[in-house]
Each structure stands twice: as structure tokens, then as C-alpha cells.
Amino acid sequence: MKNPFIYGGVVFGRHFADRQSELSELTAEMRNGGKVFLISPRRIGKTCLLKNLQRNMEKEGFLAAYVDLYRAPTLRHFTELYAKAVVEVVEGKIEKMVRAIPRLLPGLRPKLEPNPDGTISFSVEYIAREKEVFQVLTEVLEYPEKVSAKKRKPFMIIIDEFSDVTKYNGTDVEKAIRAVVQTHQQVGYIFSGSKRSVIRDMVRDKRRAFYRMGATMELGPIPRDLFRAFIENWFGKGGYDFEAGLVDLVFERGRDVPYNIQRIAHNIWEEARYSKKIGRNLVDKAIRTIIRQESTHYEALWDGISQKQREVLIALASDDPTSLFSRAFLEKWRFGVSSLQSSLKALEKRGVLEKGEQGKYRFDDEFFRLWIVQTP
Ligand SMILES: Nc1ncnc2c1ncn2[C@@H]1O[C@H](COP(=O)(O)OP(=O)(O)OP(=O)(O)O)[C@@H](O)[C@H]1O
Ligand SMILES: [Mg+2]
Image (cartoon, rainbow, N blue to C red; front, side, top):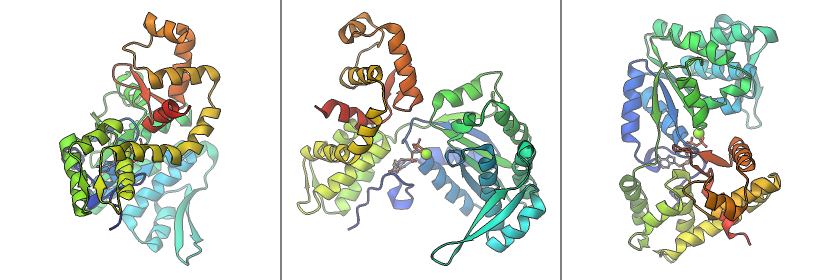
């Protein structure tokens, strides 16, 4: 039997666990043309949730487009990707898209390229002048509302990794998006992101464009009882015997992050493929394997970090103080307040650490933390 625990990509159907309440909440919002900001730390499952929602909504008769800001380094790219995503869900066929673009979206043109396998890939190319980019973007943003009215079909748009929008320099892009989106009655929007501080600032700061525009939804881990049932069910189907409490140990070690849980479970499955017996010892063995698989990547990451920051990471990886700025902690590790502060900021900016709810720092990648602890 094929390993059912999939990590790193999007999971659907039988490989997708729970998220029922989030799906119904988002579905209701989209039916009302709502605007939602979805936030969570990395690898909790935003993209999986959103892609599953997209499929469900398509079945419900929605035009449902998905755009990933991470894949658009500049505003021009963003405009191209956005146009492609919306035109694709409206027109479907390549011939229709090719005809629709010059007619509906000035400043853009369709681009066709042959693939090695004989198929043709379709993309959208920006051809207007650089300074017209806001104008072209606005036209593209307006398009779904117009189409929705014309086709009498509800529309929804998912913008993933939206916290990345700040990379387009300044808040003008935010303002441009808001100016259009807030007038839309027919179109539901989900803005999703993992840089929670960035999204929070956008929706909470009166001076920022998205101030109170929509509801904020914090995506948490999958509830343990539901995720446990999912994992035990698969191990059962595979004919595995597992010790009681095994799955809870996986949750603890993986800090309830679905990516970690799936990856550990995936490795356990392989490890016990022939013996079919899973003892608790296999959990740590699986984690050691993962750390080994990632070690080249971790070494490169480590090489790119300053000595001071490395010291902070070592302290954080092995110690769990109630306060990082307590005298005991500072003295034990010989840190000065301001240098600790600047290291933490830098590490957060790099995405190595994450600042949680109560201002507590934790590792973005639990396996990296374990690599630091376990590397002699
Ligand atoms: N509902 C789910 N059921 C099963 N596995 C899941 C679920 N959600 C997430 N996962 C697992 O977690 C991994 C990461 O999920 P996903 O990419 O959706 O997270 P994310 O929050 O979008 O992360 P990032 O912030 O890095 O983009 C998936 O590849 C999958 O293995
Ligand atoms: Mg994602």
C-alpha cells in the first residue's frame, strides 16, 4: 500500500483531515461575499484548507480563483498571475482565454508556450508601460465583480501569502487593492498569511488600508482527537499494530504542526513497513531520519547566521525560560538586553523564529530546533 501520509504538498480527500468547522465558516462567508483574513504560523495547513475550500466552492457553482503572492516577486508579476487565475476560472479553455484577455484586460496579453510533452502552457504577460501598473492592476481587480454579475455566478478569490504584499514597497498596493475590493458585493475574498504580525498590522492599524475591512480567522492546529482518528485509521488500514499513546507522542514531538505530524507519521510507516509493529521508539527514530534528511539545508542555514544569533538559537533550543529577559536567563547565557533584542528581531525577520501570541519566541521549524540540540 502507498504511504498515505503526505507532507509538503496540498492534500485532498481521504488524505485531508478534519477542518470541517473552518470549511463551513469560510463557505458561509463566501456565500455572503465576505472578506476574511486567515492567519496562522507556517505549516499549520492554510494552503490545504484553502485549496479544499476552492474545490468545494467550485462544486457549489462558484467561480473560485487562487493566487499565491509568494510566486510573484514584483507587482507586474502579481498582476499577471492574478489575471491568469481569474481568467482561467471564467473561461476554462485556452482558446477562450486567448480571445478574452485583449478584449477585457488592456495592458496584458496572452502567452502560449509549448511544453516538452506536446501540451501548451498558457500565461499572461504584462505589456503596458511600467508606470501604468496600478491602472492595469485595478482593471484586473475589477474584472471578477463584472464577470460575476454578467454570468450570474458567485465569485471567490483566495490570495495566499498575502502578508508578502509589503514586499512591493510601501502601502500603495494595499490601498489600491482595498479601494477595489471594498466595493465588491458579489465577490468573496480570503487573504491568507503566515506573517501574523504583518496581517494584524494591516487590519488593526487605522492608518493601514485594510483596517477593519473583514473578519480575521486564526487557524489553529487540527484538534488532537480528530487528527488521532485520522492517523490511527490509516495505520489500521495498513495493517499496523501500534502502542497505546503512540500518536499523542507524535503530536507532542511535532508540536501539533500538521506538516510535522504527517512527516513523522510518513517515516514511521516506512520504518515499520515490514515488521508492522510500531513502538514509541520509532517516533524518535523517525525524527532522527528527518533531521538527517534536512541536515544539508540546516547546515547552510546555520552558516548564514551570525555568531551572536547562533548563541541565541542554542539558548532557545535547549532552554525554555518563562521570560527571555529575566535576569536569570540573561546571566546564564551572558546576553545583553539590546543585543538579545536585535538578534531575536533578525531571526524573526529571517523566518527562523516566530513570535507567538504572548510575545513568546519559538522555532518556526521544530526539526531545526532538534537539529541544534542534537548536533554535538
Ligand atoms: N487538514 C490536513 N490534513 C492532513 N494534513 C494536513 C492538513 N493540513 C495540513 N496538512 C499537512 O501539513 C502540510 C503543510 O500544510 P500547508 O502547506 O497547507 O500549510 P500552510 O499553513 O499553508 O504553510 P505555509 O505557511 O508554509 O504556507 C501539508 O503538506 C500536509 O502534509
Ligand atoms: Mg501555504
